[in-house]
Length: 565
Image (tube, rainbow, N blue to C red; front, side, top):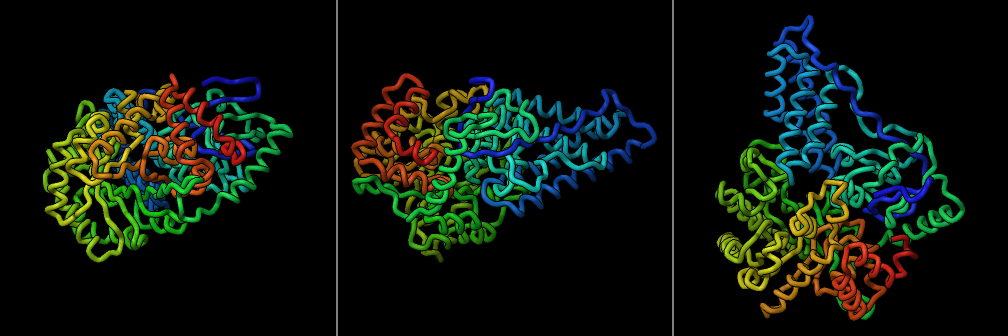
């Protein structure tokens, strides 16, 4: 992306909204300890003790912040807390201390080595590099006795500008203080983008040059257009004022997703635990399209018991009596390594043992999880569906369905996030009752583009015609199977109101998203008929690029401009 003019910057809009505010830049990173810094008066044993204590302190702080967060934010913080005490990182640092390095220099160099290894692995493991550097800075700050890096403190709301944000920072953004978010790197499916959407923060990523904006500079952020304008004029002030009115009008969803001519499109919510589920129900969600069960498994060295899982799942089910709750079985591996289940030494974790595949290397974990789901469902009025992530073949779908049947679960399904599953949906649906498109991973795998990398943001968008063709083929496979089995979408694509129209036009049955997106998606769907949605879907499929597809569809949806979406 590049600067449009002297006072306007363009990037990738990842969360809609029109905001004017003063800039606060993220503080500079903790300074690097002097190269070759050695122990002076401290013994290696004392320096090692100090390092371990600092790491434990950082982990405790992150866990405390996680306890006060919810959903995706909590999961991100818990994962980062695990990194603070990562045995590989700490052991590497202790080895350097034993060789004479100071504690600060040792953790700095050890983290650099771990980060390089993860970067070279690519894919999901490369996403953890940000976590490693964040933890390194926090440990060095703790050793120095200075405040840890983080979001600036302010008595007034501000627009936060950064090169990128660590997961621990994005997870605790307070939308009452941080009113918009701009980064010079990152992509549309990065942690920063996902958290911004969950919080309803207008956000632009991959906007080069914004880190040079002065402190207190006044900017206009258009999170839909992906632009940042310095020293906004009368037009921008009017647009921001109009957005404030629009945002208030979009605050409520009546709980009925449908097109203008009455075609029903249930709008569900993605949740990561009972707290999320309660909030989603209050927002009018018509059910849960994705219950991420990782929240039960993260930040622990052993598998949670069946009883622990039953209690956790029941809290979500109880928030939606009489409504559908689609639970995704454990999606461990890649960016969510678990010490008791996954192998961190895999050469390419994004293509390795993750999701359903962990049953190959650690049989029994999935079976016990399904037993817990069945027990939780017994005492609940929710309509519980269960789906497996990372299914690649019809044979795998059949094996998963058999496990569900053995556990007493009657509505098994699978995620379509691997291109092979999209291409063989008809065969897969002979074994299961539904499929749900995970557009984040489907896009990443179809385009061979790491979703965290800013330079690849243009590739890593579900507006890519190739990705839309995979959605079309998935629906076509479901139709060909002949049993009227539903195709849902639970990836981030469902939260884009314009893309939601296209997905409905392609034949998708249900859409699941962050609860904050429900009202906007509902408003835009209600502005078109099913036939119009189908026409727009055909327009997007015929486009030669993602940019052309998005522009063509948006040009036929004037409501998006009116609503600031």
